[in-house]
Image 1 (tube, rainbow, N blue to C red):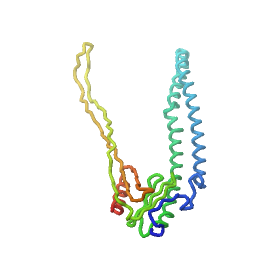
Image 2: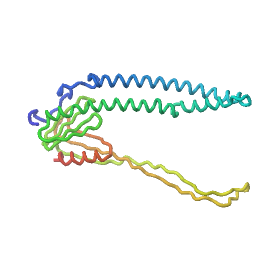
Image 3: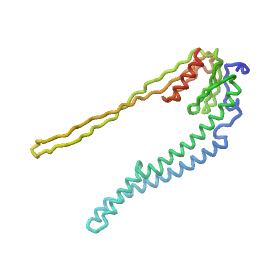
Image 4: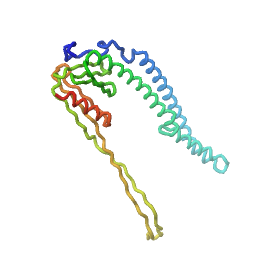
Length: 253
């Protein structure tokens, strides 16, 4: 790492010679495919919306006029269709919303692939000896006993530090709050007379489930004025916990 007289900060793309996502062949293709799917699915949703309004308006008139004439069921069918293709209806969810999510997921996989391809070239130039890496979104930390490297493909940042530049490392698992869901279930029952008197009764059981939400904050403080702090906000899971523990043990002064 001493070859580059660290600490230093560079433009990630100039340093590696690798292209921006939009200028990368796979990235440009992923953008085009996603935009085409999004445009087609949004157009389909607009058609559903118009059709749903028409069906909802016609349904009661056809139902009422069809009573006694044998075609009242057409009004019912239109009401069902209107419900299925409304904004959050079953058909709209399956043919539009889920397909949009799939398209976004496919695009994100290519974005992640683009970020991953910077790890090895950067590490080979700036890290000596063994090293580990952890990428979260478009940010990545490469670290080892001698120091660390951080890059972010979204803003072209690349910064590297020797271990001596690191003044402190902190880790914190923050509680974001909790949410509770619940309800009640009644078994058995009773009979109520018109005068309000009830004979018999039921057993009601209430239940609730509380879910606590957490996230990890991992911060590296350095003496490098051009980029004095590297901060990562991470989801709370086993993989993150292992990364935080390992990076903290290696980088903590």
